[in-house]
Each structure stands twice: as structure tokens, then as C-alpha cells.
Length: 424
Image 1 (cartoon, helix red, strand yellow):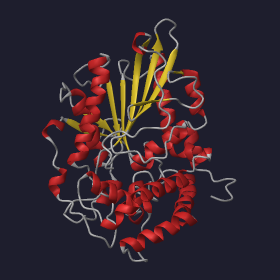
Image 2 (tube, one colour; image 1 turned 90 degrees about the vertical axis):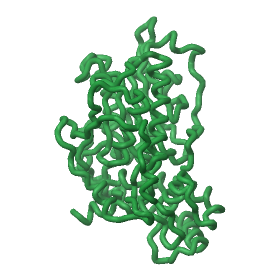
Image 3 (cartoon, rainbow, N blue to C red; image 1 turned 30 degrees about the vertical axis):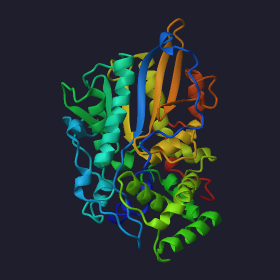
């Protein structure tokens, strides 16, 4: 098992998504997305009452998971990880039942190696902490200052905070809460997580046998696709990377974007390759996630989509464990957001920047009590395919995600079965 967990730093930014098999931006402004639509009404706040908000957000900028081999190394010195004082809050990390934090094999694997400069791979930096603090401030403007939806002081009865069991996502959640509530809290902030085997906040290649079978094939195949393989050979030659080195475009992009975001030098030969690296990394991830195949996306994000819909239904039925809960926060990864965007039909073929967020709002029309769901990505409202408007009637939204949503029982049943699978 130690060898399984030890693959963490080998596969670019697929670390969290690929469980045991792949345990594994300079962009500070949100990307413009393909499906940007104006609000249905000039003043929707006067027509709709906000009932519930759920936010999936990527962690902030971090150290790379692995440096590009055979090129000038960046110096990832410890001072790049200093936390800004305004991001401090009192928090505790627990399991889903409030007990001790589970073991963290992904994080443990990072700490088996050091980057040049003396820091561990995959660690949230000062820049990343500030990015999540700013995201928290954006949420504060919308939900506290403009809409008076949340109280100005953190309350665990009102706000649920969930993270993958990896330090960068835990710290990102902490920084977002600091920005959202401006460090105002009467109680310790609980950040809930779970053991690696049962995590649903990324595609779990360790916990789902069938996904591991499908994913290992697709991953190996992605780097060998003719156009990608030819470009990879060319960039290896341009950068002077030895032919025996195991690299791919996702690894190159991961190191490149991390350097750019922190103002650290990149190999000069990489300048002319930047756009191609971005394109090929997305091409690879699309091949791996295979959005045209329903089953693959189901296994990647089906339980998470089910959870989002279930939270909505429980809120409307008054059966949430905390009846006053208004906000669910999920601190996740790029490899969480991409299959979610694919399943929702709104992936724009761009890698999600650090601190990117998918926000799902539940609204109720004041005059009719009809319920609607509004989805935004990096602050831009989205028109979900199958929805009649940006404010999507709840039944239309549920129908739109039903092809990919999986209950935990059905998910586990499919994961444990390879019957009829003749070719991955």
C-alpha cells in the first residue's frame, strides 16, 4: 500500500483526483466562460428569495507537485508560504462525525520529497492564501453586504465547511472563511474531512475499482495520442529534457503556472510553448475524463452532484441536520471542478484557475413559491443545457444533472462491479 500512496507527486495536478493510481495560473482574474448569460430579470432580487448557497472552490496557488526535470529549477523557499495575519482564524479539522482528523496518505506522500528551496510539493502559498481570502470577500459582498443573507459572524449552524483531507484545501477553506467573515467568530470553525478511501470531492481512483480500471487505461492513452505525443517530443527537445524522463503536458503546465503565479523564472524556451502547453494539458484531461462517456463522469462526480441536489431537497423539506443552514462550502481541486463543469455542460476548455468556484444558489420566486437554481462559474452566471433560463426551474435542473448524479449506494455498487466490461 505504501507504493500506492507514494505516487502522489508524479502526475501533475491530477494528484488529488486520481486517488491511489494518480495521487497525485498566473490567472488571478476569473476566466471568461463560454456560456455567459445576462440575468433573466433586471432586478432579480425583487422577484426571488435566496434560500441556500453551495460553493465548490479550487484551492489557491501552491508549490508545484513536481518540477520539470532537466531544466532550471525555481527556488521554492519557505517564506513563500508565510500566512498573512488577516487570514488567521480559530479552526479544527475533524472527520465527518466530529471526531479526530483521519490519516492523510496524499499529504504524507508530498512530505517524502523537497522542492529546490526547501519546501514540500503541493503546499498553499501566501499568494494562494490571499486568493482565497479575496474569494471570501467576494462572497461576503454578495451574501452579507448586498443581500443580508448570512450573519456577519461565523456560525457552524449556518455554515458547513467541508474539505478534502489535504493541507492546501484545508488552509484554503480557512482563508476563505477569514475573508467571508472578516475573522469574526464566536465559535471554533469546524472543517470536516474524511478518509481517502471514501472521499467524493474528487474522482476517487483508489476507492472505486471500476474508475481505476477505466482511468488507468485513459491516462496511459492520453499521453500517447499522436498529436500530443508529437508535441511532447518537440517540447522535450526544446527544453533539453532527456528522452528517458517521464513527463507530460499536465506536469509541465503545473510547474509553469506555479512559477508564473509567484513571479519565479521559467525556462526561456517555454515562452513560445505556453499556449500549446495549456491546450495539450486540457486535451489530455478531456481524454482522461472522457465527458462523452456518461459512466466515466458518473463515477468521477456522481456522488458529489447527488449531494448538491440532496442538500437542496433537504433544505426545501426542512430536513437538514441544521435547519438554519444557509451555506455549504466545499474546498476541492481543479480535477473536481473540471468533471463537474463537463457534467453540467459548461466546461469552456480552459483549466480552472486557482481559487475558481462553482456556486449553486437555490431561489424561491416570491409570488408563486416556485423554486429555481442558478449556477455561476468564477462569478459569471451560466445557462445550463436543458434549463429554460439562468434561473433554472428546480425540476429542469434535477433533470439536467440526473444523467450523472449517483447515490452513494448506487455508486459503490457500480464501482465494485466490472461485469460486462470488455475493454476499459
